[in-house]
Amino acid sequence: MIRPFRSSDLEGAVAANDAVGWSGRRVLFDYYSTRHDCALFVAEVNGEIVGTGGATIFPGARATGWVHDIVVRPGQQRSGLG
Image (cartoon, rainbow, N blue to C red; front, side):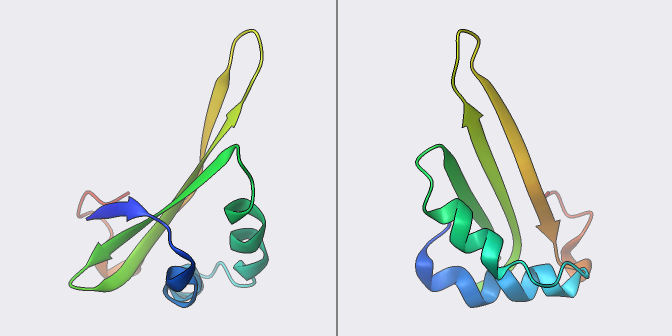
């Protein structure tokens, strides 16, 4: 299941990123979770966070979006979560 990130998801989200070699990402979760133009998401399987992702909107005459930081734990990759 893909759902919005909650502050209680932080440890699981950091662990999912660590599992793919993206260490030191806690600061990015802290940063993006406080911005009004960003949304964070987690992928959850059987109560475990197995992936993360984010989206940012850049306003303007032609608003654009950026989907970023898509991570899926190695054991769940190629299952459609990313």
